[in-house]
Amino acid sequence: MSIRSLAAPRPALALALVLSAAAMSACAPTAGSGALPTAGPAAFDEADFAWSQAPGRNSIQGRIAFAQDGKAFSCVANVGLTPDTPYTRARFRTLYGSTERAAVPAAVVRARTVADANANYSTYVRDTRCQDGRFQFDGLPDGGWFVIAPVKADGDPIVLMRHVQTRGGRVVALTL
Image (tube, rainbow, N blue to C red; front, side, top):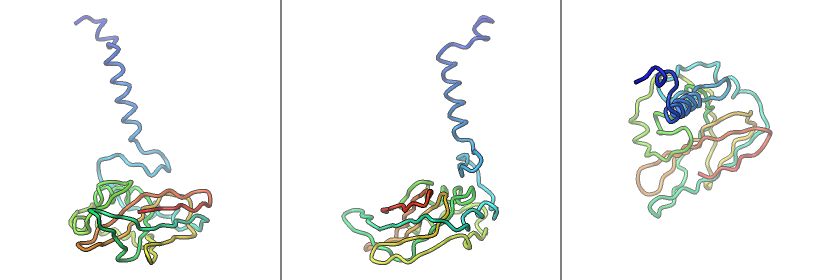
């Protein structure tokens, strides 16, 4: 191999290095993005939840329309709304296998182990009644949220999870 080939990488190698660097930087957290690298737990920090306590003009209007194997599922409990923070994002990635959307048997969610499981973030979780397959959250500030709805047909319950972004005083229509 010549010195010239070491100093100037081949075009394909150069492109691969550029694409690799771009992909890695896309995974890097940015201030206020709520994004995390895909590996490692995030520590619970109450300061990360502060934004979710501010009053807001946003709403989420949801309905349950989940069906599987020809069976329609219905709400079995209240619907929860959890702020998107580094801690909850890492937790939900472990519990639901995603931070965007999931439908996971409740028994599977309960069986999974999360880091810092004793962190008490429940004071920041909102909940509302699901009646006739509908639910609503009002007075929300701008930000990311995880909607969690336990549903059931004939068998064991399934937990539906969806990430929602609120902003600009709008109503987000959500179908799970």
